[in-house]
Length: 208
Image (cartoon, rainbow, N blue to C red; front, side):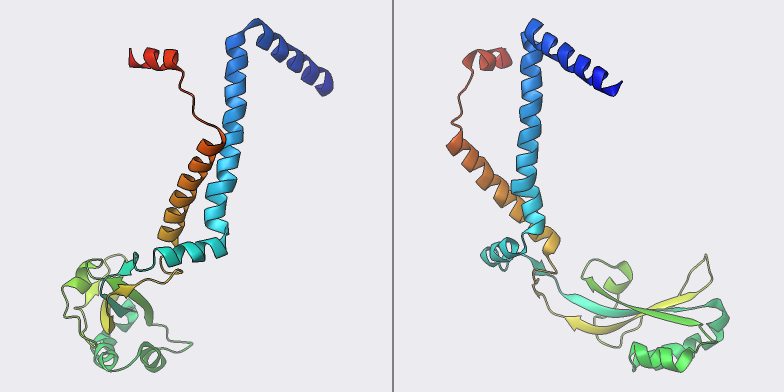
């Protein structure tokens, strides 16, 4: 059964290790590699993503590194084909009113001709927005979606000045940098515990 097969495999592996020293060295290298991988995973990768206190402390040491460019908060409006005759009226009302007021005026449970979502874009991140005047109330030209025949436009709501990102806003970048810092620290600790001995013969073979 499985027990016999397992015992036989174990015996054969031991025989291989005794008969072939290279195989034994390879197995040891493989096992040590797995151990190093697990240790690095625990000390570096997992810690960087799970240690919220350590991440917050690290963020303080690099405060000001992660920045927003100037941004525009916009509303993206989409008018369904069934509401095309109301597009001009919607645009005129949207220019001086907030999204919630626009939706309240032009939609109801039985009349869903209009949708609107909030987005924020940095300069250089949206081709249509970059061509507009960055002034609250500015509307982009109507664009027709060829697939569903809806009419779409955007409205600039607010201009947000350039500034530092918070930890939550820059989290992905901070985790990556924290991981790099932990990895350097981990390598230094390993060097301290296990002095590096260069195998000159192996090095010479590599050079050749």
